[in-house]
Image (cartoon, rainbow, N blue to C red; front, side, top):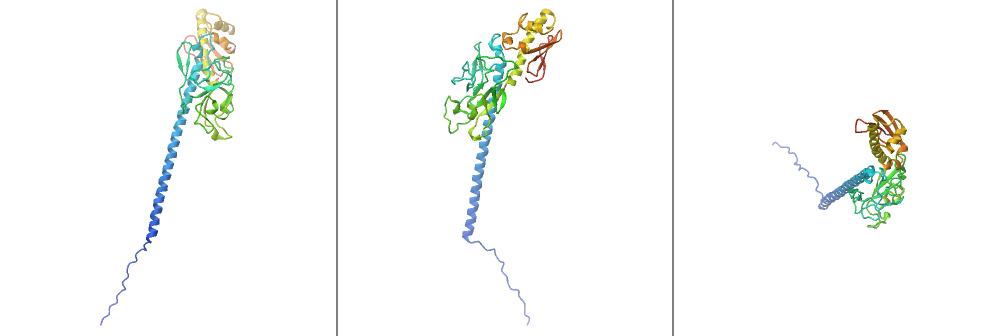
Length: 325
C-alpha cells in the first residue's frame, strides 16, 4: 500500500490584540494630544492677534505723532504771516494747553509740559487745527516747547539759535510731542498730572527719553522730537522770500540788486519796500550774508545754516543748494 506524506496544517498567526485597557489608554493619549494641540494653537493665534493689534496701534500712534509734528512745523514757518509784520516772526511755536480745554495757555514757562492744543485761534479769527489725536487712549497728546521757540513770551529765532531740550541725550530739540501708553499700576486717570500719564524723565523738561534702561517695563511713552534744524531750514526759506520782495522793489527803483552789504541794509530796512519788522527784531539782518552776482541776481547765506539761496529778479522762484541748517 502506498502511504502519503501530509504536511502538518499550520494556522496563520494573528497579531496579539492589546488588552482593552491598553487600547483605551492609547485613545485617551490621542485625545489629550489633540486637546493640547488645539489649546496651543489657540494660544498662538491669540498671541499673534494681540501682536498684530499692538503693531497696528503702534503704527497709528506713530502716524499721529508725525502728523502733529508736521502741523507744528507748518505753524512755525507761517507764524510771521499769521501774526503780522510786527509780530514775533517765523519759527515760533504755540504754548501747551495746561488746563486741558483744547487751547494754548500763554504765556508759558521754560519747563511747561501739558497737552498739545487741539487748535489755535489766529489774530484773524480763523482756527488753525493742530491735532485731535487721542493717541489710542482717552487723552490728548502731551507737548512741551523749548523756551527759544515759544511764541509767548517770544524770544529771538534765527539760524543761530538751538533748542535746549534733549531726547535720549541728543541735543538741539525745539519741542517734543508725547503719546502716553496705557495706565501703569501707579497711575490714576483721568487727571491733569503728568505723572499719571508719563514716566521717568518724561515727566518734566528739559531732558526726555524714549527708553528706560533701568526698568524698561516702567516706561511706555512714545515720543516724537522736533529738532531745531527741522524748523530753521524751512523758516530760512520764508525769510529768503521776504528779502527777495525787498530786493526786487529796490531793483525796480534803481535798476539792479543792492551793490553791497550797505545797500542791502538799506533795501531791507528803509526803502522802497523794507522787510517786516520781525526781520530786524529776530536779528536776521545781522545774520544774513548777501552777495550780488549780477545786476539781476544775488545769493543769501544765513549764519549757521548750510543752505545757499540764489535770487533772480527775472524769475519769481528762489533756487537753493543744501538742505539743512
